[in-house]
Length: 227
Length: 404
Image 1 (tube, rainbow over the protein chains, first blue to last red):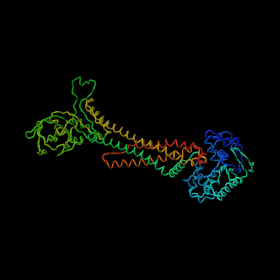
Image 2 (tube, helix red, strand yellow):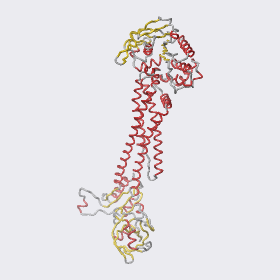
Image 3 (cartoon, rainbow over the protein chains, first blue to last red):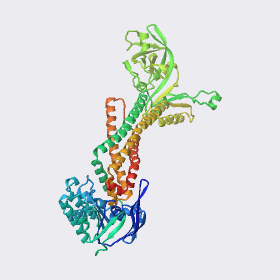
Image 4 (cartoon, chains in turn purple, red):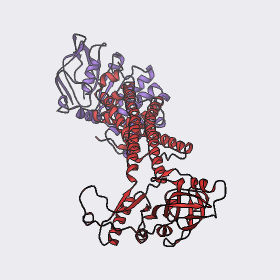
């Protein structure tokens, strides 16, 4: 359950103040499949970063599962990210020197999960992405679609409630992109809250609820989908 | 959320292997720093030990017993009563030999007498002593033998002469086996001392040495001039000195009427000077460790900016600022440990090489220097990676991930 009320996020660019988010209020129910669309500079990535606790609003209140998370310390926010939020990036952001399995293992290491349980959970996460046979491969030995699937395995290995995907298909060819979208939708139908940021209308329109942003404001909201 | 040590080390090790050139550079810098400290202090320590050894060969562990109490202040009852102090006797010397800490003793009697051979004569300093004097003073023989190891109380009529005495009395002729007249007695020459220069105020080339009992008869005296005592080790000098004082006090009816001195004081001064030298070179070498530390800081700063995306990712995955600091510090520490270890190895190899090339120099790095070098290396590694680690922890994940 995500509740944003009157969120502002200002950036100082030179001597000019830029309102990346200008009074956004939004409620996202548990298990929703949501897309945020809009041209670049519309504030959609800033909104995603705020929801993902990678950034703090200039003003406004953000409640996650009823808890005011804007008031949390860096350390507490890190724990929330680790336990409840998964990220999928356009550029995959896999650590190049680590194997697929080691990349997936990272959130578990940070959470202090004992090694015995880690191996099993990594295996399950990779198997869910049909990557069991690629676990010992380094990212450079994987195709783009495989890399993004490793990233999704990593984002879901902690079984978060929210999955944030920022242009997840931006660096992929059409077919791999379709695969990745199917996997994300599969996760959504299993109950995860899925938020996809994209400027690709074809992908954005697949979401049950669609937001359009312009100049830091929510321009349109297709309304709460059937969660 | 605490990271397991094993995971930290594994992650740091992986990160280092990911950038081998960078890691190797830092490793070398650290290794040179630690190696320099080890080699230089081992040189300093080697010099100190070498000088100590040379002193020892001159008779360092020497404790000298002199009759009479030399006091700089105060008037003792004996001076008031006009009494001469009780003399040192051969029995006193023998009593001193009973301690385990006493390696050798040589009673010493000294006097002057006319030495005569086939009409040639001159006045000579006569030393009365025992067979152990030769080794105790580290003298050596040019010809023949030194005094025989007989009972101290036996007055054997033999003499060992200095080189100059031989030249003056015998010229080119053979001295060994000839009979000398010293005072009113006859002695057979059994050996000629090798030149050893001046020693304790007498020119060894110009003395004649006879058994102590013979000297007592010759000079008609019971008392000894000195008793030279060699302690078994440097550490034993103190106990031996005390032992001599106590034993002789007991033998002299409770009177402290002897003076005991040691040659240790000079050595202590040299020890201090060379010890300070070792500290100094160690300190200079430690500067290279500081330089290595600064290099670590630079390289870690580069590493942090090189790996901005990775650090941003870790943050997105839920790494706390503290965890980021720990990971970066661990990486630097791992490097420091490896570098320090390599440096220690190189340093020890260096000292081994020095010992091989200059066998007289016992170049062993002192333990304190090795420990300090390692500690300073680790501390520098930690200190100088704090800044990069904090910078990494403060990194804005949004900027880091966008790659801007």
